[in-house]
Image (cartoon, rainbow, N blue to C red):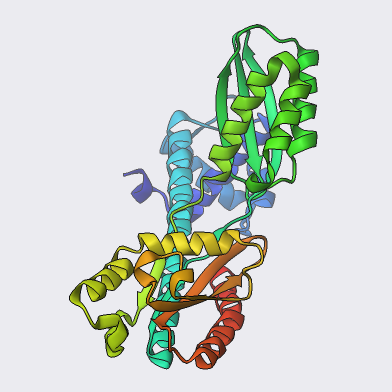
Length: 348
């Protein structure tokens, strides 16, 4: 009912009164509102509107000849409208993410389809994901005498909190030393760069507090390993049946189809490809070189596309060992070079 009572002008004036009162704590007069809003109304018109708002119970006049302040009803109206605006913003943001995610999925599905059509082989494209995540900052702070809070922040702004139970109380000086020790040794390192030598050095320098270092390192490993599930888009699986050596038995054909349908083994190939820092070019796996057992009679050619800052994905083509490697590589090069630009546009 409240929204029906107030037109746009009254709503703007009420909002201006409330915002001004929240800022100053002083009753608000019509002259102040005439400068505060974009309505370009005279003080007399604003006084009339304020009189209506007072009669409706949205504002009150605490003293004669003083300005107005919001009533509980006025605050309620303001908060409800504020929540509506915020909810609208959140919903718009959600829709933006959904639309852009759907747009990216459509692009990747189309890339897989075009690649399968152009090559006559089976294809796969993984969505871009963050790899080679690095430690940005570690903060240890006391919760109480028996507990420590460890906060690990990565360069991709993943945050992990962990409560560490203490076997004995530590003082602020020790806490400061542990923070310095962890940050000076771990900042800027990726998970795979934190080797046994680094861990041994940290524990030795931490002395009797080596158990705290161990728990922090476990949390670092959990945080850095928290990559989202890799989404993989495939196309052209039935193209493999065009080659007798890949479909000469029902079992072999079934295994290949299952590999493409389940995608789990494809995901492991993608992960291995992305973790290899030297795999930004084109990789060729022939027969038994393939990390996927069901593809031992195939050749797998992959390329890694990169969107910068460690955000990478994989394009792959699977066919018989007698595939047209030159044609496959040419297609991969074209897509690898264009995919970055295409996907970047979906993020703008």
